[in-house]
Length: 167
Image (cartoon, rainbow, N blue to C red; front, top):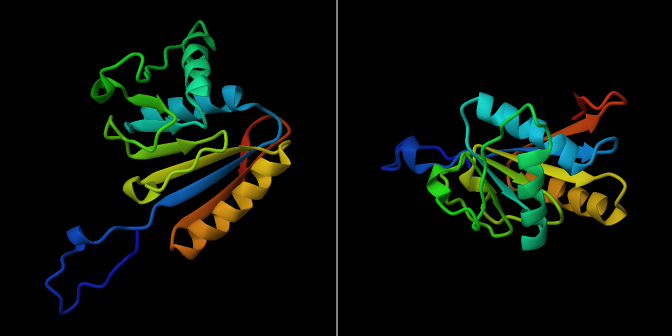
C-alpha cells in the first residue's frame, strides 16, 4: 500500500505496492440493493472483476437472490460460495475477507471490514446514511485509510439518485 523509492536500491517498482483508491458512497436516497447493481455493472463494463464483501452469510444469500431478479431486462453475472466456481465469477459475493476470483475492485457494505484493501486497485465503501453507527464507522475508516496513505474520495448521493464527488 505504501509507495516506495527505488533509487539506489535493489528493490524494483514491481516490488512496491501502490496505495489503493478508496471511494466512500454515502447512501442517503437509495438502498444498497438499488445502488450496488449499477456500480457493479459499471465495474464489468470497465473490464474489471469485483468482490462484494458483506457483514454476514445471510446478507450474501439475500443479495445473491436480489442480483438475479432486480431488473428482468438485465444480466449481472455473479456468484457466491453456494454457486461455486469462484474463478469463473466476475463478481464474487462473500462475507469473508477473500478474493477467489482475482478481482481488482472491492465493494464493502453492511459493517464488513477488510484487512486486504491494499490488494485491490479500488475499494468502494458503501454505507447507509440513515444508520448512525454505519456513518461513525465510515468516518473512522476514512481516517484510517487516509493515515495509511490511500487516496480517499467521498461520493454524496444527489436528490435524483446520482452521485456527486464531494471530497
